[in-house]
Length: 292
Ligand SMILES: Nc1ncnc2c1ncn2[C@@H]1O[C@H](COP(=O)(O)OP(=O)(O)OP(=O)(O)O)[C@@H](O)[C@H]1O
Image (cartoon, rainbow, N blue to C red; front, side, top):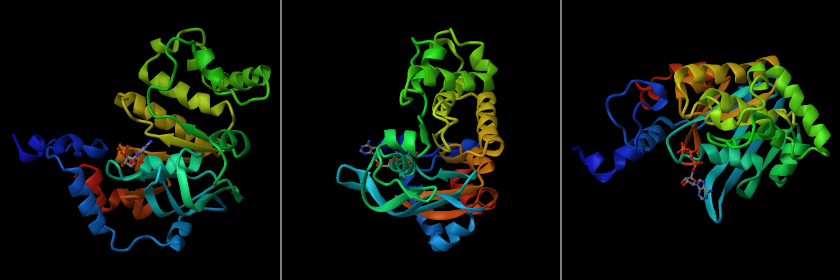
């Protein structure tokens, strides 16, 4: 047994990170050390801005945020244009989900700002973000209620609507888009396939017709054929409907293939940023996150 396995580091390590075929296990500490080494030129705010096409829609400036008194994000900046997609990759614990949590209002924000469509939304609650600022957070895995029907689950997405009728109307619009869900509307959500459940999670967020989708690990726990399906749905929402997408994705290859912009997060800071396809070609990113 290797020392890593004995110490348990392998469990926290990166095996086949990014969906690649890696036979060795790299510990999280190694990934952080090596990623810090490649981050000699941390991207400036100007460099982040240069990747935005058109108007900047979602912007984070000099954000310090975390949980309780613990700061996880240090002086963090992010820019994404309207209808663009941005994917955050990086080692476990780097703070990727914390970025989404901070945009949505789940963290303590010590300083810095979050703006959407030019409006300062830093201090809005998650409910206000969803209802007034058009930002939706799509939970990781296992967030459907298995004993409730598909329709009931979808209606839950409209809980901030002013009336049940409005929620129903909005849910019907979503059903009209996805036959696969409409055909199963009276079935318990627990009998859906993994891919259908993910579709329901995404659809539930669409009931409020958000402009920004925060997507936490869309591929987690899915078979490859469902992963492709989920990315096609996201692609349609971005390129077909103009939604702005910020996602966290452990499957770095998929995430960077999909996204216009990629950020590599290390220890709560952006170590590297570039167009998705550029990062895919970056040899260090390939070695650390794409399996070779
Ligand atoms: N609700 C919370 N309360 C306290 N600490 C938290 C909470 N959520 C995350 N953390 C801590 O914040 C740090 C960053 O976690 P985060 O989930 O943002 O990382 P990540 O890059 O998304 O990691 P992973 O890829 O493993 O999901 C970790 O040290 C984690 O333990």
